[in-house]
Length: 114
Length: 111
Image (cartoon, rainbow over all chains, first blue to last red; front, side, top):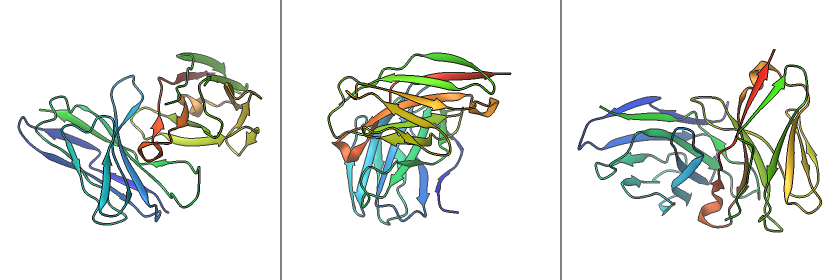
């Protein structure tokens, strides 16, 4: 079945450490997104990519980095510069070739500080 | 960015219709309204979307007012598994068409 796979499901970060969250999709979607969700809140956009080898900052990009070397993969690195990384991270994708279709989401990675 | 307003919580009896309202008075003429739901610790699940006509699929119905300033999501026969947070969302034109999430409505379906 096609879908979006995020791994790991749970991740712990030590002070000063960079960690990378994986997002893989086999939907042949062009655009991919990373959102952050804090308890009791809606999602906020971190980064997005509409084509391979290109990506743009979202509303809260500071302390994060991404790459898009392959169409199906969009990993997110939470750097040590992100001082409050504890949150639920969600990856989404959409086929931009078909207008107004919904974004599909993975099941998320929950990141905590040790 | 267009914003949406939803009641923070609602209850519904199992087997009854659940009607979830949403206000989006600043929506632009060609912006779609999307509904997602999220069960704790899972990713949001797409339910339905529409522009100005009413829409129905196997999960729900979406009623959009003629002035497009509000909409209602209808779950015709709510079950306990429909307990979740429901988000009414407008998709932005900028930033790659990001989804603009509000606080959502926490729906509790009770036996």
